[in-house]
Image 1 (cartoon, rainbow over the protein chains, first blue to last red):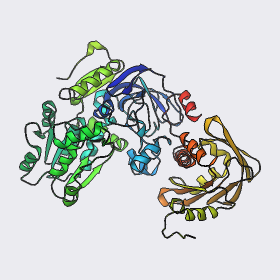
Image 2: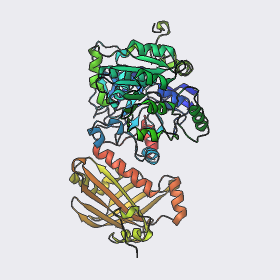
Image 3: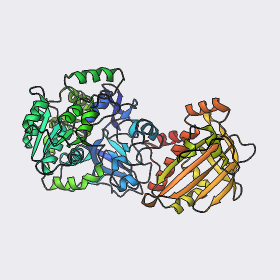
Image 4: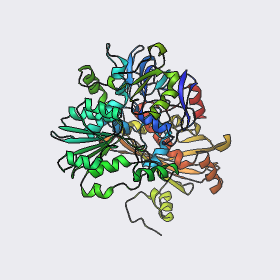
Length: 400
Length: 191
């Protein structure tokens, strides 16, 4: 089959590799119909995530048709499914508590050593996201092997297009969990850093959870425009001073809850950010954390910090003093996708949540390396690229 | 003689005397390198004990054990992978067995890697069962052997942790997780 493989920083290629096979009883093989490039794939593309190996197949947002099942799978050939990016067994203690992203068993035993050493306990497996989280082949390919297929994939009802449901695999539940982690109370003002897909879904989710106001922060005009479409007020940090603006917009109080949907590759020319960039390039520290610093600084006393953004390693100059003195609460984590999928699928069917607005580009799997470069170089216009293995060039289109 | 002052397991002690005393709690102790590993498994105690009590089941999740032959009800022969494609072998006898609770073993004279240990099963309420392995062994060829073994990922402490994780996976999910995507890759992983 054809698959998008990682070979190093800014080097991804479409290679011919072996087709996947059923290896365990609960496996299924999915023929990919749509798969997206995630903002967090750019962290891999930019070489920020350790434990990548040449030839790793990327992609953790995907869906398709069931073509083969193991004896323990509950799926049936021909069903259309969306697959969660977290690989969870459904039977361990954490899965029992719906903490699917903390599953004890999704990560192969040998790969759990890295997480155990780095973080104290190993995390669940993830598709296409380094060997720290299992080393599983991802879905930017023609086919993918899906372990625990009786627990993860959700069957899509007839009548819904791929583009309506594809984002159930990661970014929609991630945005929803981000808003949930902000413990929003009626009347709250919520500030969201980063108007990428997760930030934009967090904006929509925050309003559905009863936020009175949502303030979205970015520097890409097109992305701020999308946030505005969902009712958010906006701050462009290249035009205005973010902290000062937030304080003035909230009557001198600060936002009740803050959401960092930017993460370890924060953009912008700020002194702390430049220092972090230098350190990251020297491997003295791995993460650039300007956005979370600023979010903590702006958050009101006794407020809540939600951090869906991906961080991988160590940071310094984390404002622990402000965090303690103001009595803030932080909630974070990889998304427990399986927990949110059924309700969010229903919200899509009911028309409460729209996801298709996000897609700016559609292209063939063969053009994936071009897609990565485009996404990397132009994050204003490129909001989401969907790859389709059977894409026909003549139907090339972009959303208005 | 040192007496442990805190409640931490002796296998985690920084004091070699405390560790040595723990080795001596094993029936017929063999070897003085001590390791302890604990895992919580979301299955009933009786079920886990029964699976482990049939020693021929162990190679299913112990990646470095090639095979175990039963010589009698209490005596078994172990063939275990070693670095550079070699194997090491020994006979082991069951030195203690308490239904649903504990199995202890020790290698017999002439073992390539003298070893002894016990596996204990304790109820963990709605979290299932706490399984603790306590193993004493003689590292092959002293410290050099240990370094070589570590390079080849067959260092016993690492191996024990991985084996217990695989045991947990098998008991909780009915299968052992792998990131391979072809049979060929899976076979290479196991080799």
